[in-house]
Image (cartoon, rainbow, N blue to C red; front, side, top):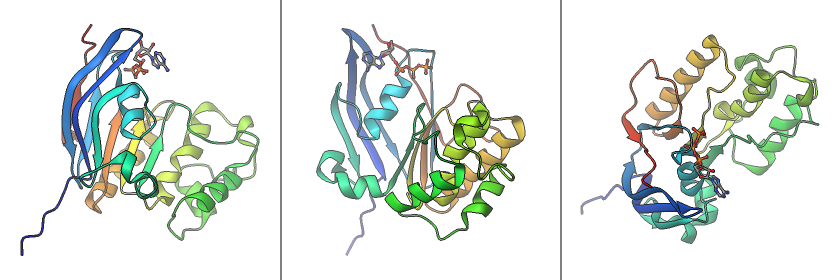
Length: 210
Ligand SMILES: Nc1ncnc2c1ncn2[C@@H]1O[C@H](COP(=O)(O)OP(=O)(O)OP(=O)(O)O)[C@@H](O)[C@H]1O
């Protein structure tokens, strides 16, 4: 018997038109376990739109996005259990503390059994665990969202500009975490305007079509 292994994500013939402008057309690619794909392109090219569509949040696309060879719309619950999406709006509650945000996340998504204090220490938030997130700096707030990269059990990570507002040391730690995730059988689809220290598995360049 031959065992077939499918890509974690396959994007087939995807097109996106917004306000009569084609952002991208006939886009196809696979995201395999172990891979990190960096989506690049100028402001407004459609990178965030692409990531939202892959995360199942877009409503302006034609074509197909599959998770393990099944259309994401047909396996939505299973896909969302295996997906970590961090967008520009990173889904943290600014009234809650970092610890409370992680506790909330751990209630709604499958997580590693890690100590949340330890995770916050890992992302450089030692001493800020109990401070309402709204009182933290932009980079510290982003770190609260990114702490999920240590907690999550999801294999598919879709990350929109994860390095925004993060200092150099933080970017290095983050990049190391992304590659560790890939080595452990996960995959990353991300946007970034900056080059990674280690080249991505694939680069996807978006340039607005019309
Ligand atoms: N909800 C929406 N409704 C209509 N147009 C939208 C919507 N979201 C984005 N757009 C438009 O789609 C285009 C692409 O936006 P998108 O955010 O995907 O670009 P981007 O490549 O991620 O840009 P940046 O590098 O600035 O983050 C922009 O012109 C934007 O105005």
